[in-house]
Image 1 (cartoon, helix red, strand yellow):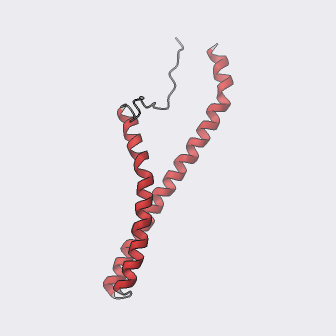
Image 2 (cartoon, helix red, strand yellow):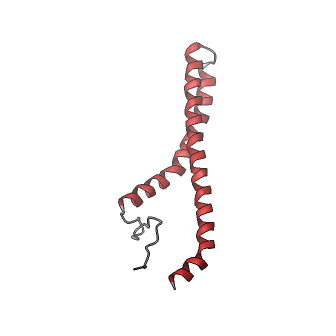
Image 3 (spheres, one colour):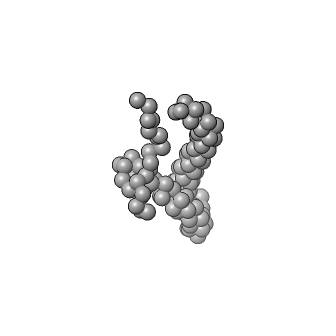
Length: 108
C-alpha cells in the first residue's frame, strides 16, 4: 500500500521540490541584492569623503539606497524568523507546530 502511495504522490512531491528550489533561489537573489546595496552605500560614503559628490547629492542617494535596503529586510524578516522556529521545533504564532518538511515513514 505504501509503495502505491509513493508512486502516486511522487509527481506532486517533485513539483513541490521544484517550487521550493525556485523559492530558495529567489531568497538568495534577494540576499545578494542587499549585499549589492550595502556595497553601493560604502562607495557613496567614499565619494562623499573624497569630495566627488556634494552633501545634498549624498543625502538623496543615501535615502534612496536605505529605503530600498529597508524594504528588502522587511520582506526577509518573517522568513528568517520562520526558519528559526522550524529549526527549534517550536510552534508558529498561529499555534500550529511547524513541520520540518520531512514526511515520516510508516514502514516497519
